[in-house]
View 1 (cartoon, rainbow, N blue to C red):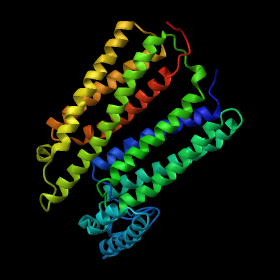
View 2: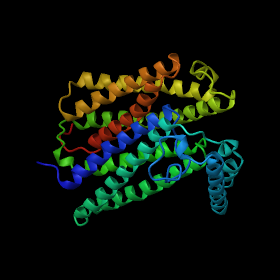
View 3: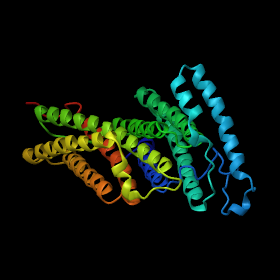
Length: 350
């Protein structure tokens, strides 16, 4: 059985969104998040400059003023909605008024990130259009695909807030969490329209064991993702506050607070649960698609832990930062897929 147009588009969009997370990791690791100080344009143009000579002499002041003006509107909206604490945080964050010097490399990295994001937006909308073919048979697919479009639009708006607030702590975490919500939503739609292609033959007791174990691992992974984004935000604070210049990477980890200790402790819980999943897969001598997904899950868990160890003991190398971000995204997607595969009994019973 061949994939139809919706299935192909949805699966393509899932992988494209994961690629965007990879690009986002490059943006974060290279410090290019403010490579474009405005949004949706970049230095006031749809195609950014390649040299500072193409900008007015007072470009720093101009874009800071634009950012401050936009933030004043955001603060008023948040206060009207009752989010006074967030509004106060934005209004009083000194980094918002920080002037950003032009750096051609960082500008074009961020610009390419935005271009990829725009392509993802088009793919998500195309996924929704093709979901209309399920309106009569699986109406939930159309509704969920429409939800993905709305969330993607909100994600784009949130991206503008991230820039406007100069990478305000909390905003980046929300940006990452929302990206994972979108990609798992698309993955769910792709799976539900393709589950007839998935052949699983295990008894019901084993299915339940795999389902519960993977669900626990998924919860731990989501918590680890949130903790990890908070660790990354704390590193940003260290970079911006210790000295006038960016402190060496060798002191970043030692300067972290309790959040890093919690993040590291949770990795042990993931290692134990991942090891148990691997033991179950080995003991039951499973075959087929489910075993492949299960082995991939175990491999991703321990690869992610090794990358985390490398980050802690090798002074936070940029390459490992990117791999760590992509790794957690792949972990969550693979775990979510395994939960979908084991959620219902469609084969043998005890």
